[in-house]
Image 1 (tube, rainbow, N blue to C red):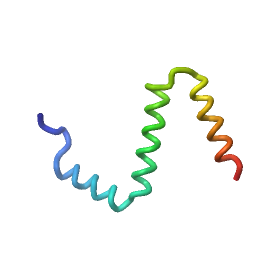
Image 2 (cartoon, rainbow, N blue to C red; image 1 turned 90 degrees about the horizontal axis):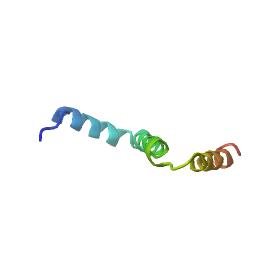
Image 3 (cartoon, one colour; image 1 turned 180 degrees about the vertical axis):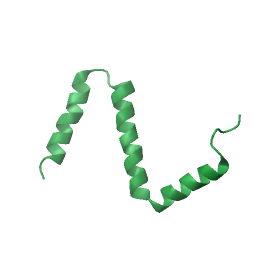
Image 4 (cartoon, one colour; image 1 turned 120 degrees about the horizontal axis):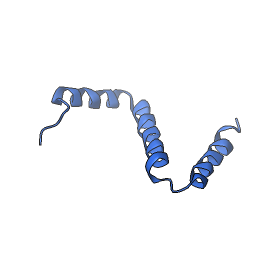
Length: 61
């Protein structure tokens, strides 16, 4: 099976990730959080728990 993305684009993406590790990490984590919320959270309570964690950890500052 052939990739839809060219080899040159894949190499360029990997090079960008290597030059920008923090941005790449942020994007991966953000994507994982969205995927969890969309596909895996079984109830609103689970999402509310995440929001509570966010409030406790990020609004202290």
